[in-house]
Length: 155
Image (cartoon, rainbow, N blue to C red):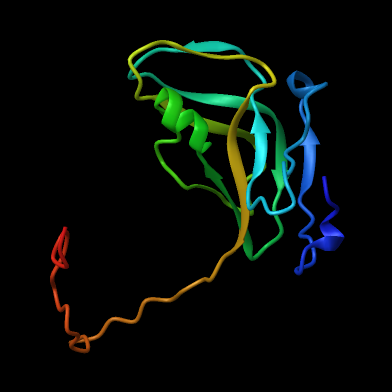
């Protein structure tokens, strides 16, 4: 795997604390030079039944630098082949959270799906966070779309 020195942006350092049930598992890592997400693996074993949701343990906690978040995203192969996904995608891990990173997974398929210790279950993407303030006003500027909502621009 290529080093982060080959990437155009400097790497962000995220401190990791391995928990006892995470011993022997790989930490999140990029599978290829062009990967945006780091693969993360399960630290537990279960059979995810059709329609079932479960917060899958990863065996580690992280300290994200202020001004950043880590997004949890599904793996496309699991979604396409088995109907396994992350229901709150992208899930957000805030910079002040220090508990175990868990991945909420759901089985939209029609068969039980085995999750085994060490299986790649999701991707983690580090991203900057833009904070915002809300300013209450009497009126908003007009746009071509206006108040047109869901489906208003076509199918």
